[in-house]
Image (cartoon, rainbow, N blue to C red; front, side, top):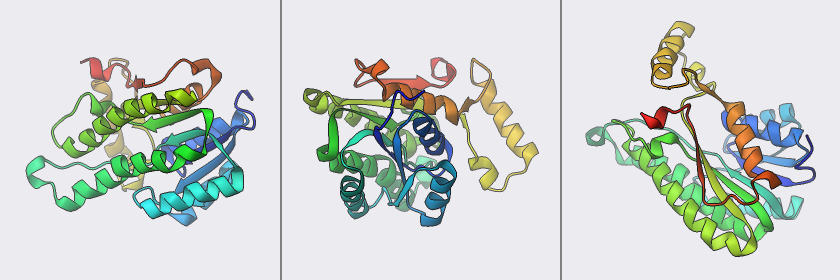
Length: 247
């Protein structure tokens, strides 16, 4: 389980959910992992639990991204794996969507992700792996998710451009698009177990495999895309949604 031994891996939004699970997975495979997030206390707590490194940085702030790239270079050298995972969700019908909601989602999910890659390119090793966390909503938008879906569709578009631009350096750029995934987000907003189960049951009904995804499933895919097993994969969007987008 050490096929990523001594690889330097940077994960944005690594203090919970998919980012946290991926940090755990990559560390178990021998990588030297750095997690980032905008909340200092949360990111340092997660790093302590995982036994990885923490750097506080807000992906929606370009100055923060520049400082992050510089600090990683100074402290850890070149980067082998970059998992651009930080993102925010937001729902709202188009007519009711405020400029603030639009900007918040786009600044993190699209602008922040774009400039994280941009500022890290000089520090990526030749042959490195870049993975974006996208979403199956990029290919199956629904009412109320217009801005979020658009941010992920655009993310996948520039992922493919990046794959072409970085191919001469053998740097591979891919994305993973999960469907409904079990994370702590619903518990955090204060819903009781019965309500959460009700919501989950409705969602699961729409999934052909009749189950929710797990953060660990996505973590394993990021690990796979970052390993030599996926050395011929670039510009691919891997949909992991139990068949939901087939409907």
